[in-house]
Length: 308
Image (cartoon, rainbow, N blue to C red; front, side, top):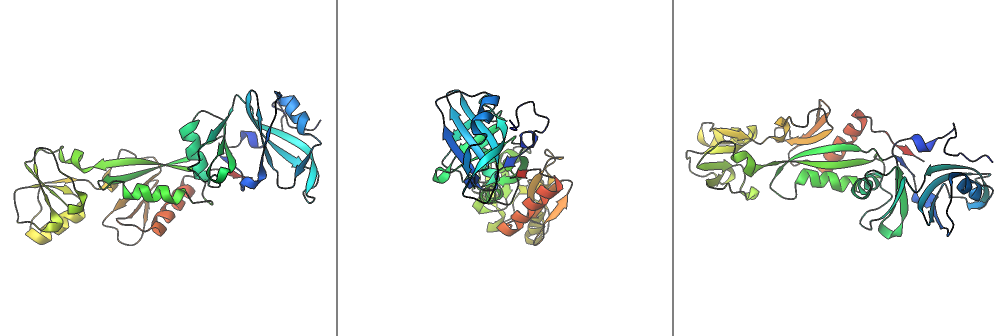
């Protein structure tokens, strides 16, 4: 028997991180009323004919789910005998998840589903949108932290990153996390009876204090601004001075230094900037800009993945 078993020195995919099929049409599913061992599962498939597209087999049996990869004698015919079997995960390591909200063709969706439903599993097989089935083996996605100011809600930059990852077939598995800077919590760091916020659209009130909005150009009063450098510049243009200010600039947030981060700055107007493992995009960045930022992080953080 030439199948690759648990103790084989030639284990290939089982030891690699972020293994994702390049097309879920290569994943076949079968059900058995019999339980298997590592040896008997390999023996079961050796010499059997499989369809030419089949690269992986998900096996449902009474003890759970197995995941294996097979090689065929000849890739050209419609069906060809299996010549080798590598067990990727046994029922103690593999979870089967149904999440019809995700497109299983997208690596980041697979990683997100694995993190949500089976964070400790070696392999997660997911039945998703259109009832298509795919898997991720040894999920270790790149975690991107999106530092954003809220309100508005949802946090726009985070929402844009999430939406891009949900359709990016050519990116490695990535999971986005929101690092929120909230205006009301910042206002409480300096006690004031009157706060000036940059934009009426923020629709924020700070408990126990009056709130005015810079974009409404109110009459000058004794207030504390919750804003950023651009807000201070606009205030100086309107009134000829700079008030006490609590900065909400997400670019100044140091809590996530040393992590892959996307944030924004209103002093940037066109290009993105890369600094210390993070990418800064303009305030109001386009999806093209944000996709470029994700690409930069995936490259600079060497996000490893294996498409097969």
